[in-house]
Image (tube, rainbow, N blue to C red):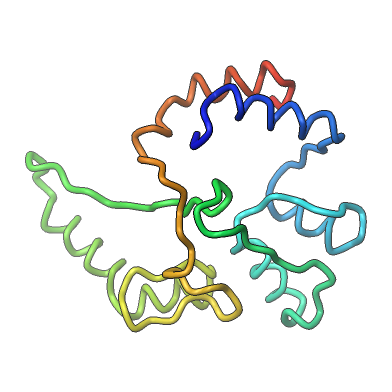
Length: 161
């Protein structure tokens, strides 16, 4: 999105020309790399950490992680959010849920068990991951990523879905 549709489509065509393989999910990609069946894959970081934990630690992994340069489109940080509607009769319970999710215990759980970046200051991110503050997302507004039908059409046109 930072370079426009034409460059994005050209990049995707380049991936296809290089013999891209499709996998069911991020876990199978990491496992294929770890098993030596695949040289590189694009995944969300927390799947590598999940498999490393299952294998008894990073020292037991053949696959490694590499993070893209600050500002690179691959440095996009996915956002999870919660919101309340003013007309919801159950806002009190929803507010309790959000408070729970934003508690120190929950944020620590997300960082240590699901390997996601915590939102609260003072809680360290996943051990071995770069600090969230070092991941400079590209200059993309989230609203610019809302064209799912257009994205799917481009992926279909290059043969990726």
